[in-house]
Length: 262
Image: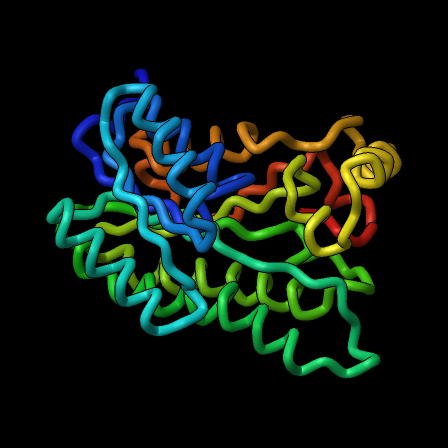
C-alpha cells in the first residue's frame, strides 16, 4: 500500500527549517494540502515555494509565534478558514536552551514552556473538533532527552517529558472519538537547532556533530528526512491502530547518556 495524502490537509508547525521543513516537503511530495507555520517569514515562504514545486499545490504560509495566544488562534483560524478541514496536525515548533538549575533562569524556563508545552496544548485543543470530524490524527515532535537523564538542558528536557505524557493522555481521551495521537522522538538530528542554541559556527557545529556521532551506536546522526519519514508513516493509514506511542528515531542514542540530543 502506497502512502498518499491527496485531499488531506496537514498542518505543520515550525515548518521554516529543520525537521519541520523536511516534514513539510515530504507531505507535499505525497500530495497533501499544507498549512505551514513559522516565525521567520522569509524562510517559511521559501519552504512553501519548494513544496509548491513538488506537486503544484500551493501551501498556506502562516507567520505566527505559537508562544502567544494570538499566534495560536491565528494559526487555527486561518487554517480552517482556508481549507475548511484538518486531517493531520504535526506539532513540531519548539525552542531549546542549554540551561541547568543553577544559575536560576526563570525567563528561559518560561519561554521554553510557553512554546514547547503551552503552545502545543492550546493549538491542539483548538483544532481537536476539526480532527474529530475528519477522524484525523496528531503527531507531536518530542526528543529523546525526555527520557534520558542529562545535565545541561533542564527546561527543554522537562518540556519534552511533558509533551510525551500529553501525547499518552490525549491519545486515551481522543481514541473513542477516532483520533490518534502519537509522538516521534528524534535523537541528534542534523539541523540548525543545536547550532543556534550553542551559538556555534558551521565549522564548530560540524566538529561537534562528528564528536557526538561517536556516541551513536549506529554511527551517524539523523537527517531531517529520517524523522519526516516516521512522521508520515505514523500519520498514514499504515498506522491506523497506533496511538499513544512514542517512537524513537535516534540510531540507538537513547542507550548512551549524553547531553544535547535534538
